[in-house]
Length: 343
Image 1 (cartoon, one colour):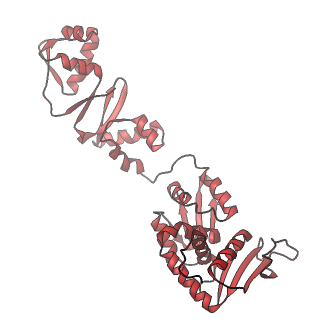
Image 2 (cartoon, rainbow, N blue to C red; image 1 turned 60 degrees about the vertical axis):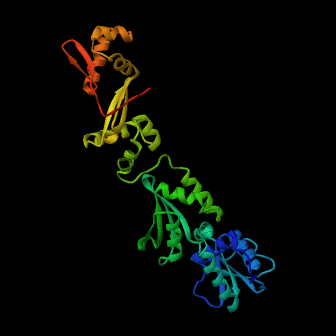
């Protein structure tokens, strides 16, 4: 093993590949198994950079006699076998050396402690034992096959805040939900294996909209209503229809958590404890006229609108608790609320 070297992403990917499919219990040989010869070739290249060894072996397993397989590395001894259980050729790269195995396991332990290499490790794991499942109702699932949970995989998935389950019925890790797919897309989990890469991105790009957990909008919408928002603005943020957001907003209003104001035929929503009253420019002009009590026709003349319009605006201001009327005269009422004009 070359001493004092910095472990590369290629080494971390090889570690992941070995953790997924290699024989981790062996004390005599390092074994890498995969059905993609490009990965076997890359593994061979990385191992030769790590170790000075010349006793590599490649074993090619064919689904039947006469099956075609990629030409192995010309400098490596190759053996061919038939495995009737196989659907396609697969390859096993072996390096037999007890001392090198000890060194390799030390490298694995060192790589698994470096958070900067977690993404590369997971790419290797997925290239070895990952697959993508789709079903009816747009179900999309990532699976990493393992007989038992592996603490390294647990830790890496938790590091990236990926929600996962280990299901015995699936014989491995199960990951679903667009948010989890997005987190794994960021680290390009499937890009090491060309077939899985194509499949992953095809399925990921098939998402039309985000699928939230139950009550996700209800739990998160209040934090967006410290300031007034229209249902259209909220719909754009949550990537849902305006009708869907209005149902949520009406439910929260019935619970007394939010209230709405209609300004120039547009409805704005804000938290009930925000201490805000929203009004239009026209109502603000009317309030500005009431430095002293005035009659309706005087207010209409001042803001240059007809008497009926002025009376409707005054009644709306009265419902908001901002003005009142004594006989024929309107006057403002002091309030602790903040009055804000919405454009």
